[in-house]
Amino acid sequence: MSEIKLNKKVIYSVIITAIVVFLVAYIVFKYYPEQKKLSDLNSYRKALYESISCQYSCPLESQVVENKTGESELLPGLECVKSCTSSFRALQISNSSVSDSELQADGLVNDITSTVNGCKQKAFNNSTFKVDTSAYFPCVSEDLISLKQKYSYLN
Image 1 (tube, rainbow, N blue to C red):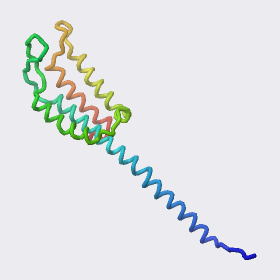
Image 2 (image 1 turned 90 degrees about the vertical axis):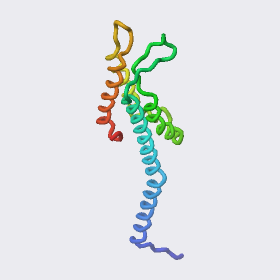
Image 3 (image 1 turned 60 degrees about the vertical axis):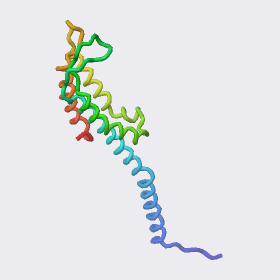
Image 4 (image 1 turned 135 degrees about the vertical axis):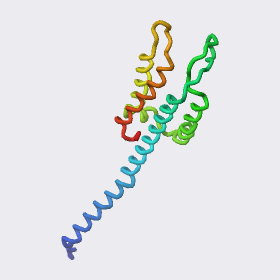
């Protein structure tokens, strides 16, 4: 019978090679795709935030609201709102793979909703049962800025 002798250097080389191959495979097939997905998701969240922030920052114009009694209200200008939403809509179409649960996972959407609702409550006039839009829109615009401290990807 012949015996095959393996020296320690060969065994260590095989083990180290296996570990390196495993690490490279992990990085290529697991880590990098996850980081790419997270980066894309955070870019999408940032675009959402910027679109909403832009809309609430638009100059207020007196507009007649349909389905009302013909009264005019101060609302963000339509052209400004359209320009705020156009780039986000294009991104939304190209990133249709983003699910609602992924979008809401870090709390940004909930914080935006809370900010909007909080300002609505602050600007609500109990005597007229209407929201004072001249106070509401600036409130939301200013309060959204504070979210940049909580979510680093917004900067």
